[in-house]
Length: 76
Image (tube, rainbow, N blue to C red; front, side, top):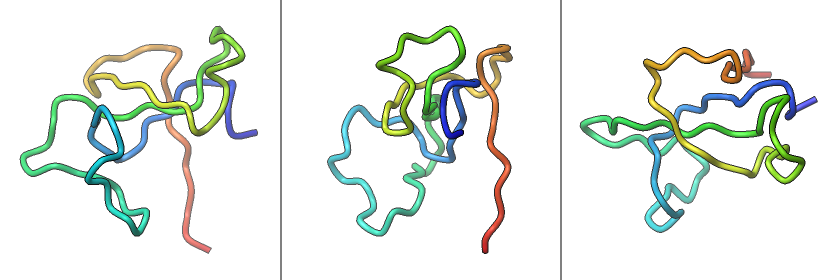
């Protein structure tokens, strides 16, 4: 279940396109950090088109919202 519960924060800073993104899949982090971070996956009140991990949006990390969360994971 990767999508549909809450929007999920990822480590990347927001960029309007993938031009200049790391080719190795690493997080795309600016120095200094940008104000906006990437959100993925859509939440339980999102339209069906947003409910996929490839859908991106952005937000300000200091904003608390019941529709935004995080996924805990670990390396294998």
